[in-house]
Image (cartoon, rainbow, N blue to C red; front, side):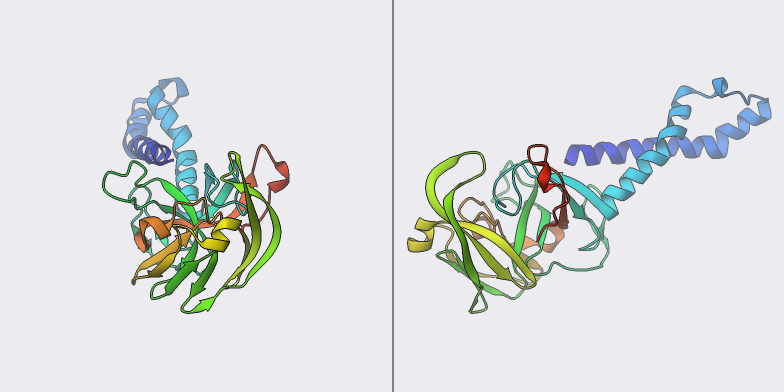
Length: 265
């Protein structure tokens, strides 16, 4: 979506400059010359006058209020499914400039259990996905010591409540691997949400197991599909500067219309 953001900002600036030029200079010249008919207005000025207010409204809405995102992978199953279109609160973590993501007005910080959209920091300077928008759940806050072992998250020595809801085959959302798994309720702060794990991971652990210390100004994020998520357990902590907003609503899924309007726990 970065290309759309750049295009929107560029078109808004160009149309805004033409709109201002016409309002404070060209219109007066036309009036002085006696040209009042609409067909005397250059086409590019006419277009700017028509589209600038619309583009400005869209830019303000997307940058500072709410922005739509599409879920492309299964890393947040069962909370979010492939094809979900979600709305993201853009002021929950502070107002930020478009494109640069620079915070200009501090408002709030992530809370434990939030589903956050952020710019992926990457696993190195050559990571092709660096800067791409990702969505994960906030697990660890600055100063926390987090451990993940056999499907159970512990924060500062306290294991989270983990209650099995169902046993079924699970995968990454694009295919079923035929591996037995469990779907379970997890209590994370004020958030009670579903996660899923392979049974094998619950019994013997997997490569995502480990202990993590969260530095100041950073966060540990994980996907709810714990054994099919490339997240902070692998690429490290998420800097606060990379945050884009807080996901709060599913507004469309063309393959499952029953999901429309579901709030994101």
